Image 1 (cartoon, rainbow, N blue to C red):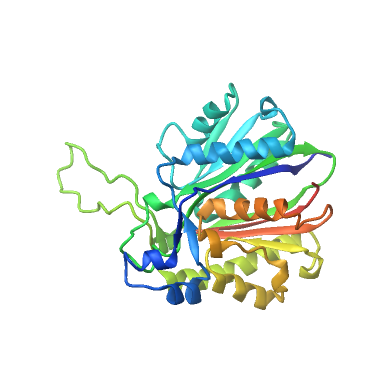
Image 2: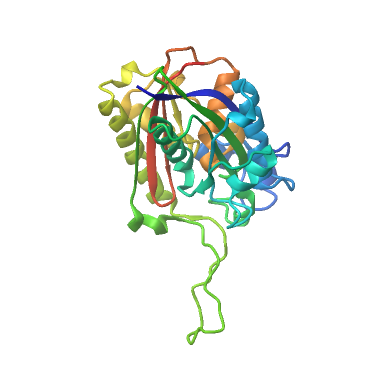
Length: 327
């Protein structure tokens, strides 16, 4: 039986730290308001670093930590909603930065669930024996699509990148995954692209909207708490495990209230949740691999630990991955 397992992790965040008090100079807010409602104290903001550059830096660290030659990588999957170009893909640009040739490289768009989607895709390529070593990256430069004058959203987001090396093995690593989406809820969390504009339009196009993130916070909170509980339950049921069998949960780092609500409902001890949103904010598809890398570097995990990664995002999308830690 062929399995896939994580053999290395990496991450990169910009050096520029923006604390809550600094945001109070831009919009009407303050540290107490932001912290009490989100749990976020600061975030990292790009000072010019591009999405693909941050992704490549996280990838290089993951390759080094995995102890492999970069030429062993036979696929690159990048999850992002903030690419530098529609084409070439961010994955193509990372491929060039790493000096790799002749391997499939592509982006996926699943909002904040992107990394879980990417992990699921890579896992299936390995289990079907089409690939042996896959680089999976979650990366965002959300500062370029944030409305810095909307105090309900600008306080949430940060920039960052996280990466893992997934490799074929006869030892079970990824135990199971679960993903889903509901497109009719699209308007709850959106990021518009380029509006239709051409000389053949007979009717003026009034559908153009600024390319900024917009969100219905109340509805997203209700959706997120429900769907994260469902996603965790799904992977537990698929693997015939209970929540007491799980050593750690790595939730999407969106809001501490969401994380705490889910933990209370599932009776998850606080120390089992890996949380770093106080220092990085919501980095969308980068949030889970960032937290995973940080916990790994701090030697939080032991071989044999069972870990659940769980996320929700624009689309609306959701998903979870249950893995056996092997490093």
